[in-house]
Image (cartoon, helix red, strand yellow):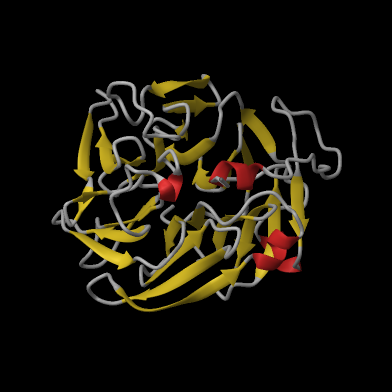
Length: 343
């Protein structure tokens, strides 16, 4: 059976880097494939991609913690969340990060996945193993489950999330729920939902269904005005990023294919649509075939950040202008000229 990691990991071939630059404390990998001169205003031509950490099975869920100045990321199959800083390097932040019960054969990826720091400063995660959206106390590491069911049935394995940061729905969470965490994926006997959904968790605790028609919904993001939702579909048969126009209640009034990555996938480049982030100008930094696709709000592809392998997700950090990349067994970073949304 084809799995997400198997598909995204295909074609893990080295990619030549850019021009030789000054020595760095971190090894340099990959490069930036430039498809438009507009990219020069987003990433400098001499900006290196630096590998800052390795030694994980599948790196995911990067999030920058401003109060402390460090990066958190997860090894989903390793059921561990790591903390990284330039001063201390990589160290365990939480283990287990997801499922913490007795041995079971239910899961193929039992750890934490997508993560954000909310507007109120809380660490919120997609907990594949507990099949829930959860919050984690930074000091005690105590976990509180915020939502684990829809219509009385357990979620599959929540994957990624984004917070509505303005308007009457401020604090609401959009999240995706593919079956990647379950052994057998869609064929898992533990799968209770009849679909792989996109949901809205309202500040009241109510869970509303956004879309039940996507095969494998994954990465999720919001436009700067909070009126458009983006969802990546990690499906080799239909590798697309969807866009939804949102109504006042937070639910879609219409939807469309925002970007179709089928032609890129046919080249054999590693990866599929997966995690994504938005910058202050509304541009998407979205995982896709080859690496991180940089897309304008009009879906024009400006370039691709390439590490040599599939990139599962990314997050802006430091002063908002460093893009951190979780790429298979490594974590990397590249400086940008733009800022992440909310900085």
